[in-house]
Length: 132
Image (cartoon, rainbow, N blue to C red; front, top):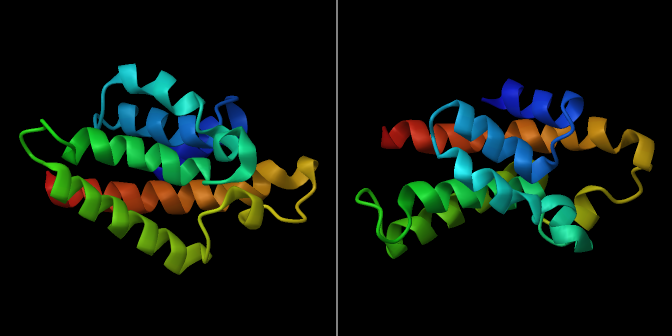
């Protein structure tokens, strides 16, 4: 999943959040109807706050574990959300797009953020594979 997500981001014009959701769709982890939901989470919701990789991953986790899903509920979904954030922070220290990308020139952003896409996809996939 991480190679697909990275390819969507680096080569196919998808944003960070969209790349995560698009790769999850390809893996059968969520429906294609979720992709438009990811668009507004790009670039820290266009404000630089929450990293789009984290936001996109949360969309997929919510779909899989959220309220009214037979395999989840609010408690499970929130636990999974927390697990994801903790693991992402363990690898990258922060979840804030502005901090993760601080002092990175625009022309280097794709290469810089590719690591976050790979990490997020890897974490997400491992969390969802356990579920299956």
